[in-house]
Image (cartoon, rainbow over the protein chains, first blue to last red):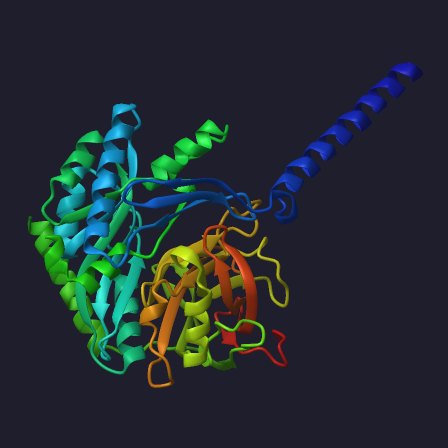
Length: 241
Length: 215
């Protein structure tokens, strides 16, 4: 009796110790010092370059570099993105996580129409306003519940823009949107007359990570780049119609 | 179609309200100076604004850098040090921490994808300082993505305003404000210039720190 109690006690102690060791290991893996930062892949394509990396918390991110000051370069980036999208779909990879850049601002109604037509699951979008000093202002938002464009943050942001620039602000519209689409939605995006660029880099990064044994949702990968729309405005939006 | 029309009209009325309605009720407006000895890309000076706002039963902590401007010396440094492909960039950074700590782990206020700015070519990156137990981002970096378009001098002020969603149970906290020089590929802060912070409380008040400490 005494030895079986001792045995059970030993099991409890060993089990507890195992749990603690496992917990410490998991926490250590997530700790900044342990995870570190690393470039996982640096890929140069014809129209753009992307770098897949992990930040110090181990979160995946992909940074896109493109020929920002060149009309031809931006068009090559768009064309290469299209080619990459086709490759992904041919490999049976869908839905795709995309960032769509428009060639002119969309109204809220036009955005809602596009989202309905493509059945896009929207995660976020960007808007353009011009403040009282003539500066270009970018505003970012995301759907809340069933509302694609909730009213109150828009109101707050526009009020803030007006207040910061000491006068009236002009709301131009929606300039980009991010989200998930299936094959049909993707093809509809490509044929939309106000769509200039459908970036699919997050999906490429996801494949890179998968090859290295890490499976993540596209929603877990942060896409980082200077918004192409900024440079399209510099070069003249009429050149991207 | 009718729904779209309603949405368009709604946005138009929002714009009108924004231009004609009451101003934002910032509860603090704290002056700060940049430290070029720590980060040569830092702005010369600016203000950190803060307030708590309730919307449809949700508590939000608003933070804002306003009247923020760069010297021509800082801009020259940025342009000379941004590296190939503009890899190294200047960012205004906002962290939510427990008061008087660098602990973002237990914070309940998180970046929820809403911000605006007039910084040239700006974009954002958010960070989960602690993945467990909250799993939510407590830090956002807003980048000066197109620094060659940065206008210098106090007559060219910039602003950047993120919103942090605060979920129950509501807690005390602080929003710390930094200027970082960042390796954008690795999201590594190479030079970290602390600017200032504000403190927020469970009674929806927001206060400036006293001698750098949240009372």
